[in-house]
Length: 589
Figure (tube, rainbow, N blue to C red):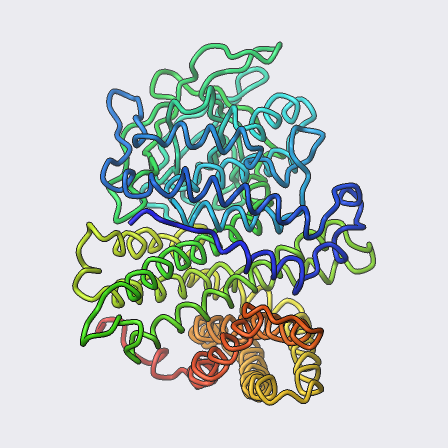
């Protein structure tokens, strides 16, 4: 099944009615002349939906059946992928939130996030290309010289050129300090040698050029991660007038054979096999990781959105199948357990979307909001990002697995397409820092660095919001408030215990970190979903008879009753002494 219809009504409701992007962002410098609001949202979402449903989605199965291949240093992409990416570029979507001074559209991050949800829901293998390219462009924008920005950014934002990120090497994994790639100074450039693995969209002929960002070490670099530098290594060298010159010494060796996202050419890349690939230092010497991490918040938000997008695609297919498949004389959607699975999928997806979109708004506020508030907003973004990356991708795996289950035996048959969502989403919890790394980051760096102040500020917001729900006097919203209050109390206890563990035993805190992250995700998702329920309640109170609003309240009520109690279960694990983990002999595993 290749059908995908973007949930435009839900997206617009979140952007314009719940998050109120027009009033929150519309007057900020750089956005004040864009007309941010319902009219702009409708135009952008409708156009993106046409591209996702009409162009990307029909190629999803095609890419799965006909993966990208490598032969004699040349990549052949899946049928139709090249034209789809050209249409994406022609629509201005690749540089949608980039600086207009370098060819970007300059729109708020919320619209980029919504677009990426559609691209991933319809065809994740294709969606990876613009995601990685925009990330590479962001690093150049933040750390490049004026000459580098002028040389590369406009072409990357327009989609004429694409970008990649080259971090991982065989045997290195997340421990980048042991990498073997080397950069030797030669005049105004460096000669790069080495091999990188798992390079997403590492090579192809779709665009005229590919701008590789490559981590490597100088001959006299310090040991470990402190000695890593970042280099721009274009596939084709760029002449002084901007035209393309000779082919650089960088070639794909092979494509990885993967569990999913077969249409994405994940390459082993060789640099300098014929003398040295010419590269140009980006940022400062030995500060490569700091440069690369500039785009990590945005990249990890987008990876979380991959979990959301794949979950939405899986839900749409499962719901359609459940309406058509008759068993026991009725469509199986009427069977209580199937209905349970579908409502669990739907409510978790809407909670995921609400959380991701809310923090996309915070990203822009941290960059453009009132100067006095930016530090606190950035601290909030920093704390939220590991939760979004890990929680959305973990839940994405659960939802896509439920999608297979709804299909029954047919879900296990590849021809239905249900299994592809499950296979494709699996990588999302691994790359851009595994979810275990995200949990460790949340607890040791984000929670620990300010003694829980940022987390406690967010919990105070939730407490105030619960008061708003209770003040309505509505029975349904009151039940949601009660469930949120119980989950909030559990979060406050877990936070206090984790902070104490950090002071006494970091290993104990790390052992509890994943459960704490998941507890946090389910609470924050429930909070943001309930914000939508309150907005819907107000619309109904104002006289709207649109059934969409009643459904919003009902969905939030199901989440509060059936999903939010998971917080207590995760809290029980997060607040335990952890001795069973710490004391278990490694040799006995």
